[in-house]
Image (cartoon, rainbow, N blue to C red):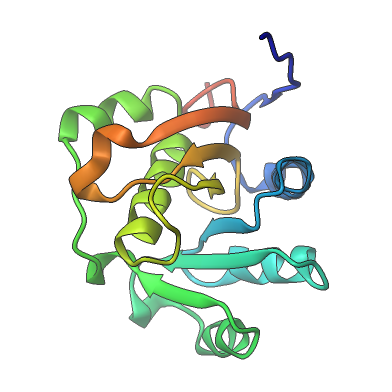
Length: 176
């Protein structure tokens, strides 16, 4: 069986791609019946955009921040009040080979981030290993990458699959 799908390529990484990434992620999640979308957010700005975009949908969002000290307390409360989970990756015990991290960066920082979010969500038992999720990533601010990923924990890392690239930057570095 052959499947032809549209992939959106952005000229460069960055937050200007955020609205298109959110639209691509929601559209494909709806098409595939995927109910979980994984969202990275360092300070809470991207989390706010995702909360607004997915408001009123049946999509379960899972948020991963870097450090609680850098994350907006108001956004944290809004996430919790919405019934969604937020974890900080520095507080989650997960790992995978550095060589793989470096290889994923060849596709862009957002690809590495999206894969890590999937590992973290499975590690935290937010998503079940083997289930498909839509996972977002970015290069510094906002989103520039969306993937469909078969989830796995760190212990099952080699079972993780990037099943679809929905969108990503063509150039992996800003200013190229």
